Length: 501
Image (tube, rainbow, N blue to C red):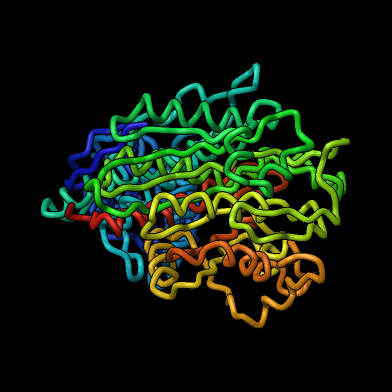
């Protein structure tokens, strides 16, 4: 898919299709008024007849509009002008791209980026249009024998900006949007892959392919023998019941000075989570292939970082593992000695992600990181708390939490902060070990964050619980690619990369 920006009047566009907005009730946007004028009232006559009301998401495709050079004009309902917010804007873009892709317009000039969206500028509107377009057109057909793709799919779209002065900003928005969209696609592709293909070794293969693709990237792997030498007994215990070896893949992006402390992302990579001895119920267990959504998103973000060649040092850790029940599996009641030396009583083998992450979080101390953010499909409790709309954010460092929340707003990839007060730590007390691996049903997401916080004393740290946001269930089942946009924005901000850079 090719994206461009231009600044031009609609009557001069010679394209397969021009896309313009119509507000409710039957009120033409500024660009639509220009087309109406040169077509001698053709469009306004159609609206008066009731062909389009202008409700958000309504579509009306016109052919051979008088005096218009383009073959088609797509009228897009945009709702009430004063109520057009970022959520509705993205929905409108998505519906527009879907319509263009299904109606044979292989290219289009889109003027929807000139709509007024409350609190958002041209850079945001163009970038979100690129990201939303790529998201809308995404398919996972690798394992289908019949691909079922459109006969004449959309190949090229040009987004119009109001003035020539904004062309540079628009071009930057396209560049950034494509890099983020690439990261999202990588995340979706890897997360959607079935667990008989996507195992810890597969994650390591993806890391190696990155090193071949980008000059700034180098990779290393920590295998089970290495983990044993390092005392990563907690990580090892989780994978003991699986035939697939646990592997921790480490991706280095070297964009900053040698003495610049790196920013580290740690992704939970449970390529399948059966629950272990504490076996999950069968209903929906197939979706536990998404329990590596954290590692998939870290891999995706590293692609974005490398594609933009951000001038900072970033390390991505894919904590690959598989949690299966067998005669060698770890048990409820086991006490594990973590890499940090702290001991953990296992009360539930289905609270395994934190047992992998705690050792990974200790391991990354060796990099003397400036900041560490872990990303994990950690708790079902986060879905109960926040649903599928917001990622749960926890942090022991207020400035870092605010940075991430700000990035989530900028990227329209929402997060919500949950507390990590010491009051919750009491729920993790154990009579036999330094802590238990669960704290009971109340505040389950927070006690999981509290558990991880005990292994992050040596650096600034934040935890993202993406159990609700990493994938969709039901008819449209599939990975979402979140929180790649938020993390990419966070790292772009750290690199000082904005609309003008």
